[in-house]
Length: 389
Image (cartoon, rainbow, N blue to C red):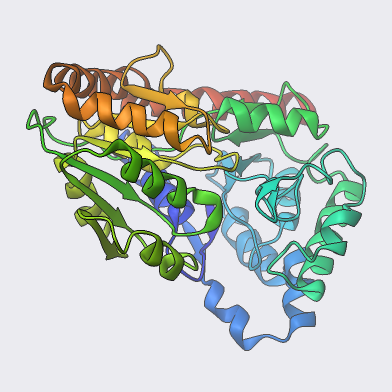
């Protein structure tokens, strides 16, 4: 399993380590090879761009490991910028099946979000070259970085790295899977599987009057909608916002006259889980097409229901309609109604808590997710054997 870490620890880093640990715990031999993105700071822009397209270092390192034999799967998580998709082409040389994780929209959207300037954007979806992404400098707001990224995508499309050399793709949700199909990917090789979340202890049955948000504070996350909904709900309680990001100052000003709104800044993962456990509900107010919120699954593992925007993969937190509620993204009135209803009814809150943990146990437990991973791995191995015969 190969992963290029982010410069700041993020959800993909946590999900990758959880996945490797869970597979080991269920009897699989897993070697996790991680590359440190801090090395980018010591590279020039040209060198970093070339490495993103074709990393000789990663190919040489992984070739040495694979040459020793004993591997069935080469599973690539994040490849930017230290790994590059070029490592997927090692599968044929060493007879191992190749799997690529799809936790964002990077291969079909330069910005990886389908969200630009405060609204949805699909200008590059299905395009051979993402000219709109280049025009708007969608990757890191940098023309050189965007050109390097689009060069990487164009190169590996032309070489067939994804169309011919990758045996399976694991999309983090059915929504993400469908987006990649719109982008021209093979339906037979793109599979949906949620992120791995470590199992929690027995779910709490306590009913607090605390609402919690955990995540990045940026425009696409919709925290301004949450704060406005809290204002309109007019309930007695506390809104706890854990996280940091570029919108922190503006959000603080928006909430300055509101009692009960508390900003904690970035908190360690265990503290975040404790906040979820104590909350009456967790809110995921994203106004962009969130691929699939790991924090939502974490909350449900603690027996905490989720109120989520009906955007992207968020509705997939409720496969049978239990464990929380949805509201139209950006609709502060609708969110306020959900908050008010939940805070005014202890009976409903207790039922939602029980349902949230039941949904986790049935659909998102480590055992359920591992079974799905094993099914996808088996399909990838079978495809590789068929092609090698």
